[in-house]
Structure formats: structure tokens, C-alpha cells
Image (cartoon, rainbow, N blue to C red; front, top):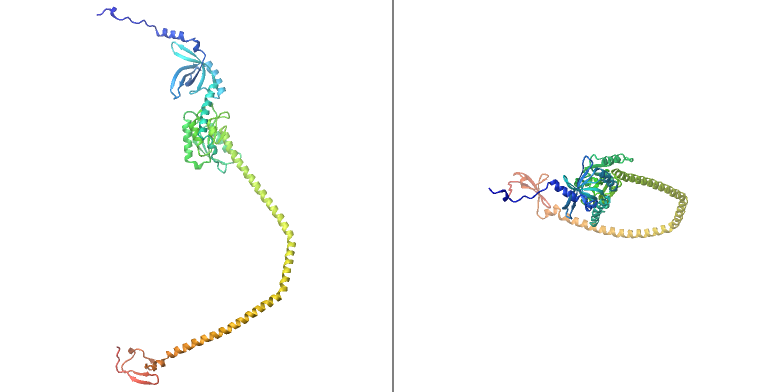
Length: 447
């Protein structure tokens, strides 16, 4: 066997705790790693039972790839102060996915490793980043020319009463909207249909878009769309600062009313909707006001019609009275005018009658002359017609026929016209033009 001295010597090691202690000594207390303001994005932010807040601070590149990260903690006492400071300034609580500007100190613990402790936060940076994102979306909508499209959608001639509602079923905001709508002081009837959607969190955009798709498939049944959500933390409204959802609403072919959050809350949807109100209740009040205005216009029109009819009747009565006062004078004028005309006609009657009699006398004399000529011509025509008839009668006389060699055969008083009427032995009389003869039939030849 080889001797021990032939093995290479082992390096001398230190315990991990000692090594970590060296890191701790070198890292903790370094001035450049204490109270440094760092720009990052929060990730996996959570609160434990002791009130300490833990998160990861990360940095992403332009493609969204994480290029740096480190664990961070906010101790309970500091967290309570920063929580109220951030909420008061931004209107929302600190949450995952926020861009933050935080004051940190690097800390290394030999058991738990390295982390940073958050000492302070600048809410204005987060607000500026949120506003920057919102402004980028608005600028894009403006550049595409669609930010005002929904505002240009025509409203129905009558006040909107058929309402498609996008909200969460059972939500307080939806209940407030329906109670306000149904309890309106005018007794107006509204026909509503709820299209349920998730109104906060990651499912907000896809479910609201799906609800709008269902409304579009039944678009002929509605006058407008109402998107409502009650109050809450401002951070819960971040989903409504979304380009895809805003573009969907801007291009929707029905007017959209948006009532999301509190009066202080403003989202991108507020800029693209046809009507923006501060709360769900205000959305109902706006619809009720439209109906009330329509009823007021009807009352005004009714009053205008009544006044117009009243004025027309009064004017007609005045005209009637005026014309009634003129009737006697007009009647006298007509009577006088017609009396003068009648007198003129009466004076002209003898002259006119003489002219008519002379004209008729001349006409009568002409008619008499024409009648004499007509009678003479008619008698001549009748004389010629009678002569022609006489000549024809003479030509067709039986006597002339007999003179041409024919004979009339009779048995007694009956004329025989066919041989079949005779029998052998018959005695017949044959009548000639100037005489007659008797004969007895001996043979009949039917040929």
C-alpha cells in the first residue's frame, strides 16, 4: 500500500457560518448599500400573520424578460406607515405588479441569506407610472381615430329604455343600479338584461368582452349598454385601464354608459364611452333623467298644442264675427248689383227677343224649303221602288208561269207537287193558262 505521505494535501476549509459571517461583515453597513432609492416592480407581494410584508423586487427589459430580482421585506411597523401613506396618495394599496420607487438597505443574514429591507416608498412615482400607462393607451386610441367613436353612436328617438347591463351578478353596485331604476319617481318602465362578468382581477377583460359579444348578437333588442361596478380599492379598477377593452367599447355599435367606482376614480373606459357617470346609481339617475326630460317635452308639446288650438279657435271666432258683421252690407251690395244686372237684362229682352224671333223665322223658312225638296225626293224614290216591286210581281205571277207551258195539277182542291202523291186511277185536273182539262192516272213513273 502507498504511504499516507503520497496523497495530495487537502485544502483547509471554513464553516459555512463563518463564511456567511464574513459576507455579513463585508455587506452590512456598507454606505452605498444603505438607504438607496431603487426603481423596480413588485412581484408576489404578501403579508404574514406578524404584519411583516414580503415581496420580490424585479426588473424587466423591453421584451418583458426579468433581468434582475431580489427578495425584499417591509417590517410590520414600517409597513403600517407606508400602507397609509401609499393609500392616501394613490387611492390604492400596494400590490403585485406595481412600478415603485423604494428606499432600501441591503441586509445579509447568515441563516436566511441576502435581501433588502424597504424603508420608504415614493407614491408619486407609482402614480406617474400608472398615469403614463393610461396616457399611452389614450394616445394610441387617439392615433387610431377611435377614441370618440362610441360618443358618435346615435341614440334612439325615444329615451333609452331597453338596457343591456354588464356587471357582476349579486354585486352591490348592480343592486343599487336596479333599485334606483325601478324606484324612479316617474313610473317609467325599463327593460333590463344582465350579462354577467368578473369586474376585478385578471378575468375582467375577457369576461367583459365576452358579455359585449353576447349583447352584439342580440343588438336589436337594446338601446344602449351600461357597464357598472361599485366602489372599492382603486387598485381593483386597474383592469379597466386596458387597451383591448377600451378599443372594444370604442367600436361597439351601441352607446355605452360607464359607471365604475367612486367619483374620484377615472379609467380609460371613461374616456371612450358615450356617457361617463361617477357611480352605478348615477348611471340609473342619468337614464331616469332622460325619461323625465322626455316626459317634460311631452308636457310642453301638449301645452303648446292646447295653446295653439285655443289661439286658433279664438282667431277663428274673431274672423267669424268679422265676416258676420259684413254679411248685411255684402248681401245688400250683391242684391243691388244683381238688381242692376236684372234691369239691364230686362231692358234688353225685347231687342233680344226680336233678334231671336227673326233668326228663328229665317231658320224656319229654310227648314220649310228643305222639307218640300225632301218630300218630293222621297215620293220619287218610293214611286220607283213600287214600280220595281210591281215588275217583279208580274214576272213571278203563276199566270205568266202557266203561259210559258207549265200546268197546275190538282186532286180536288189540293195541288200535286210530287208523283208519289198520286195513285193509279186518281182523277186529276190540269190547269193551263187559259183553260183546264180532266185526266185519269193509269201509270206512275217515279223516275
